[in-house]
Length: 358
Image 1: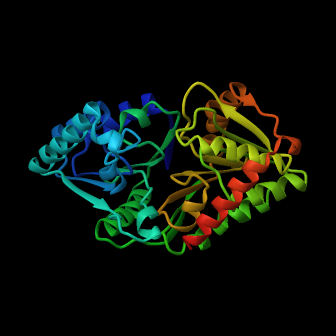
Image 2: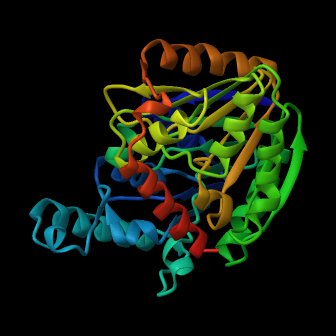
């Protein structure tokens, strides 16, 4: 097995574009967002010119309602000329692709219940012929491409076969739970219904930590914070790195609240949004993929998770992600005295609201 860590869109896109151009049989793309801006158009162009015989795009219905990180049917969005142009361009791009034989399908249509509204297929997955697979957190939109993020490229026909089965199952409307070990990595998928059994693996890994836990994610919530807190209390060095400029600003304050309840070392990623999601435990197990380590992933999102034990890949992650991100981060004083009654009340309300979804 050959694995390659691609940090940020500037490394990911040239590598993927070359794979799409050289594909001969299949190009299968699963994404959370697919928008008709320059990034989406570049993917469309690559697919249109690819000689592969089978080309499919599987996107979550989220991208039909949200463009450029904005709800397209809000009053402000409806009167925004730029957003209306992007909506028109997105529709035209999809029509052109379909007309050229690229099959497009959307998962998880919206419904009126809380679960139908929030249950999303959050996977990011790309398969090239029977040889290469990409997994991680990058979507196809300009704002997402500008964020700090990463993808993992794996060359292994057995990995591709396992993930193709998952892609086709999702395409056919059958979300599945599956797990399979490979050399240096184990892949797990969740179905959005029985996620807790899969994420127990993550919880067990946190509980089993003896030296250090490093978490980088924009949206960490319970139950993961509870386990991180317990790890910190038994002497494990726990660091959480989250963006200073979070696209959901509440989560930065939430992170401060949670970190203040323990000895968790909270760091802020400066300058731009970080969408990267990874957890390194004791320097020996790297957990990555599509999950943000949040409650929605834990309960109702369909996710793709990798448990990585390959030493070279972990060393590469430490060298090109962990160490530079920490070096550039801002330390935050989250002593318990900084807590306010307001944020205690907010936490209680969030807990109640998310529990209702169960």
